[in-house]
Image (cartoon, rainbow, N blue to C red; front, top):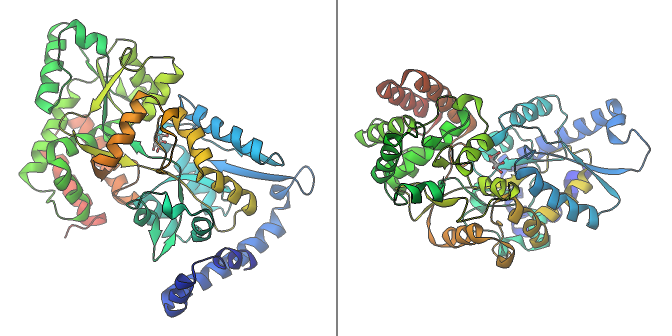
Length: 449
Ligand code: GAL
């Protein structure tokens, strides 16, 4: 109770007044407070070891993510380094679980949350993943007090705040902006066969036809299941355009329309160019096929750029990039967003971590290495390489749409059902059946009637 009051005591007064007027909020806060007291009592009674096994008073913070390799761990390490300098008395416990896009980490996190054993802070995604899962389950503390104290509302993107808020409460600290709709290519291969950098889906397929005719059986590098879904969301965007793509998630685009069928057909065609061992490859394996010259193209979020840098590959020489053909002028975004759970064992230390993650210093340490741009608008542009500077420009100029796989547009249940339908499609290639499953998924978990 005391701890919860401490955070709310720094809310803007207007918010506190609104809360007083709002019986639902009052109920939630009451529930939260009681829940917190119970969890705290339980923790102090049952889990003294987790507070400090090797001596009272040791300060620590356990941060959970899936940033374990290929550019991602390096980004996290860069921010941990700054954290250690600023808070030498706090031990940083890196509880990262391997597996791109959180395929394993999110399951481990769910188990821990169910067991009442939350890490002190974890990596989530701005959007439906945050709001529809953790906020819905009443697992997070609002962070308005941190926004107030650090004046973050002045520097965080205005369009991002609604995606991490509910009822006026802000629930996370966005540490970056990633772009999902990037086509990475091998410039030497395009040069060798005199192929243009494709700007439309047809131009892209034409390039890949030529490569296949010249003996490159799999010009498109693809990895495990989630990367196929990542590819799918980018092709939906390219084929439908930004308005209709966004309409898929807010109920304005009919999943049963010929446009969606055409988009799924384009996706099916795209898959014919991909390696047939995709399910055995991580996203890093697939990215590497491009820079090694074994494939010409790969669609992946711009964390791939962090990986290329870790491999000491040169932008524009060893790898090139362009929006996924057909999506020029559109930025399909996601944002890694860090949270504070109700019942954090090391709450003050977690607040120190979140304060760094939201700061210019923290974001400028993390993002240039991670292959993302800062969520804050005041990042030091000179610290960012060619690709990232182009992403910074696009983020401010382009039409913005949200990523499916990385938590922005659909709640977890809907996303899981799409993923299951995709699993079937990847084995039977039946576009009609796939579309029917997607229509059903939207009816069950999305806004479709
Ligand atoms: C995304 C995450 C990125 C990156 C990627 C690959 O979901 O937002 O930061 O980690 O997965 O693992």
